[in-house]
Image 1: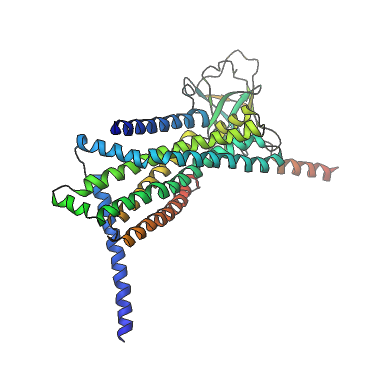
Image 2 (image 1 turned 120 degrees about the vertical axis):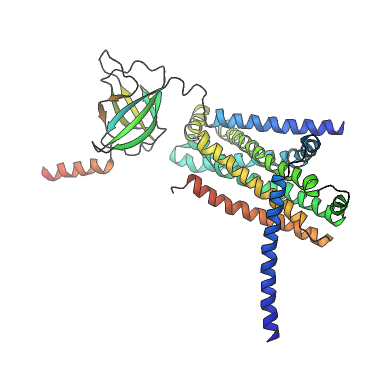
Length: 152
Length: 263
């Protein structure tokens, strides 16, 4: 009977460990099983991504529809290429959609906001969002403001 | 002239002793890992050790994880509420627990709770000449005594760390959401947006695995290498706790720099 108790104890220990790992994976880190299912990639070129990072949200009307998977520089055009992973069920983004880099709240994180256009064709895997608006950089804004003031 | 020469000789001897001790500890580690006893006989031994090393450490891990999570939430709240960003408490609690506090605190508690017990047990076996009598009847004490204890510690600590994180986050939620009234949805959403499974949770587990190796290695070696007197055992137990705590904190810095640093 003594051995049985030990075995039971170790079994409970292992199970609690497994449950904790599951909680950490799904509840805490939000690892979804169906997240990658049928997602597709689109690209957007920005002058300045200032503060946007991989895993930033991509949203439309405030609803998250994908996430940024990679950011790098296009060496020919010298612009930042943002690789966006759209959720698989998003099939309504027209080719003339526009993407802008927005800020959540005053000091919040950067995210990409998407607005659809009127075209009939929709964006497919590897498509480019042509109409983009870069992140607002405070220093540039102040610089423009001062420049306008001085020229008045 | 003679006293100077003597002191130099003493210095050299203690240096050689240290190097020899490192060599012996390496040999024990190699034995414990390589020694492949037959599974039918050694599995019950491993289960018994998992019970005394892992299961019996659960209570202290759960209680301290709960309180650390609660304190983190309380401290974070009082700091963040000034900026109106108290929703970030969930993120703060989860990140600091999963990346840093759970592996380190669980390993420190483990060194105090299980490591010292291992050292004392093996040291007493050596003092009462159980180890040498085993050798006499042809049983390898490294296989029979050291290897199951080593593996038990190696397996237990990551599991204990996961329990610590999960309980701590639950404690943070208890304080943050239930008592201080943070909106539950943003508490979890902020946490899930910022914690990445592979970058944060898995890296924390890698840390715990390394700590498990180091703590049990130190504990088993100090016990096996102790001077077979009652004083020797007490010294060995102290050394276990001190050395493994220092090793945990030092290794934690190195691993954090490698995992989360920008180089």
